[in-house]
Structure formats: structure tokens, C-alpha cells
Amino acid sequence: MKPGILLIGLLIIIMSLLLREVSTQNNTKKRVVEMQDTDKQMKLFLCGDVMTGRGIDQILPHPSNPEIFESYLKDARGYVTIAEKKNGLIGYPVNYKYIWGDALKEFDRTKPDLKIINLETSITTNNSYWKGKGIQYRMHPKNIECLSVVKNLYCSLANNHILDWDYKGLTQTINTLDKAEIEYAGAGIDFQAANKPAIIEIEGKGRIIVLSYGMPSSGIFSSWAAQKNRPGVNLLKDLSQAGIQEIKALVETVKQPGDIVVFSLHWGGNWGYEIHSNEMEFVHSLIDTAQIDVFHGHSSHHFKAIEVYNNKLILYGCGDFLNDYEGIGGKESYRSELTLMYFANIDPETGNLIKLEITPMEIKNFRVNEVVTSDLLLVKDRLNRECKRYNSSVTLQNNRLLYNW
Image 1 (cartoon, rainbow, N blue to C red):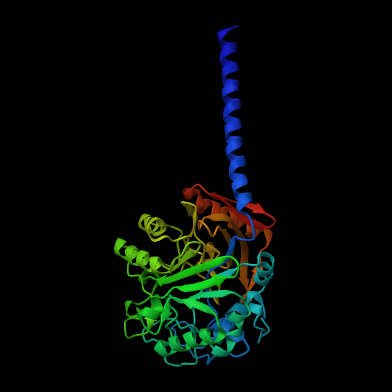
Image 2: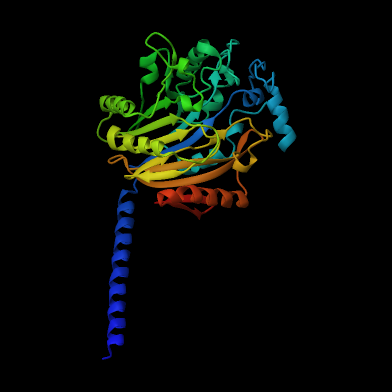
């Protein structure tokens, strides 16, 4: 036999063996996922900022006093007018389910065990606003039903709008959520209350523990930090190892075997896709050191990258989910009206991500709406652009996006 033919034969055999090995690995991974894909999985819905105050509050059945103290507008109803000029009349007052729009169908389809949002508004009738604060979000307490209609809801309160209407506004917010039996964390009447994690029991599955923090980089004043004898937010001052050790100690006091720990953080600016190396290192250290299973980042007005690190889900920036920015120009290239619903299946035994499905939506007429095909493809392309750094991607599946890692 000629040497050339012998060499070709050997190459064919080697390639065949390699392909068989890859196929075996793929089949093994698939079998593991299928074995875990049972009713015992924790199913989480996560999204970014939900801003039910100001303009959105004005279209609900019990609008607040519309007076605001902003340089842009002095009447919250002006935001409704701007939105209607952009996309047509809203026809308010609307019912309490209206603002969630097509998201409700997705909730019915996926049936999450817990829905995690960042609630960026004060729920109060207090008319005394935080002096020096350029924007004020307020929802009337009688409109709390717009949150109650979404069952199994958790609200992170550690953000830069929860004290827009001063300490009285925060206190009334907390009392209103308590009365409505809506879970929350991240702000309180003192440091102990603000720092306390929420512990939610999911019948037949286990517990979800949510820690909520906010950072100065998101616009939270340092003076808003809860103190021993003063209300405020659960402020994380920086991304230091000292902070991670404090979080680790807190997790150790509450986490039990089978618990899933979600770390919800309001951090960073409103615009820009970049994830800085110190931010990535901080989140990785939370997972490695503080036993965090899911990182839920928010503050950016548009979605950012997704990463799976050591099998744990990281959402660096979820984007706004519902706001009253409709018709306000200046950052159109970000397409911040395109918002994402993240549905994560988590293994309770390990805290590992099993599956992440993403449903793109659009904020229009002050409600959440299904997207057109061109916008679905735009979201797909942008997520792939941002996730490439983490060797991950999304693929289109039944008008939704499946995250691959």
C-alpha cells in the first residue's frame, strides 16, 4: 500500500473516533438535563426595573397628586401626553392587569414559582419629596392591585427611586406591600430590616432566598443607606472583598441544603453594554465565596450580557421592564423599549442553571406587548453580540430565545 493512502486511512479513522467522542459527550449532557427536567425544578421569572409610578400611576384607577418637582415636567400627566403623541391614545383609567399586557400570557404558559422584579417607585401619598433629587416616582397606595394581580411576586426595593418621597414615603411603601402580602427586601425602617433577606417557601420544592442590594453607581445617595436608627436602603458601598465577606456571612446564617440564593443588585449607569473586569470578578467571587446561585443585575435601561459561571446564572443587566419613557428621545439606538422576560429553571439540589428561556417584549402604550419578528431578530443579534465574550449564544425557538452555554 502506498504511504499516501495509508496516511489518509489513518486520518479517517482518527476523525471517526473524535466525532464519536463528541457525540457521546453531547448525548451525556443531554441525558443529564433530561434527568433533571422534572417538576422539582425551581422556575424563576426575572426582569429589570418596573416603574409603576409617575406617568403609569396616572393611568391607573387611583392616580396620585400629579405634581412633581422635575426640571423636565411639573405634572406627571405630561408623561402620558408624550406617550400618546408617540403611539396613540391609551384610554385610561385602565384596569390593573392592563400594564402587564402580554406578559400575563407568558406567566400562564411558564407558571414560574416566583417572579422577581426591581420595583422602582415609592408607594405613597406623601407630598414631601427628597430635596435635590431630580426625578420623583410615586404610585398611589390604592393602585397596589396592579402588583397584586401578579401572583407569587417579589420586589427588590434597593434602588435609586424608593426614597424619592422621603422617609415617610418609604415607610408607607413598606406598609402597603406588607398589607398586600407582597414579598420584598432591600429597604426597611432600619439597617437590620433593610439587610434582611426574603425567604420564600415554594411548596413541594424548597426555599428561595433573595438578597437585595443597591450601589451608589446606580444613583443611590450615600445618605439613603439604612442605619441602626434610620430608614433606608441596603447599600453596598463598593465591590470589595470586605463586602463579599459580609454577604457570605449573611448567606451562611440563612441558607440551608436545597435553598436557592438569588442576589439582586441595582448597580451601574443607565446606558452602555460594557461589563468591567472588576464587576465580573465581583460576581464570580459572590458565586465562589458567598454561595450565590443566581445573580440578578439591574439599573441599565436596556438589556446587557448573560453569563453562566460554574453553572450559575448571571444576568448583568436586565433592562427596564415597564416605564413611562415612551416618546422621550435621546437614546433611540439602544432600543430600550425592547424588554426581556427571563425564565430560568434551576436545580434546587445544586443551584445550577438547567434552562434559560427569554421572551422579548415591547413597552408600548404603557403596557408590555409582544414584539414583531424584526425586533425579535434584533434582540437575538444583540444578545449574541454581548454574550460572545462568555462563549454563549441564543437561538430562536418558537418566537422565543433559548440561551446556550
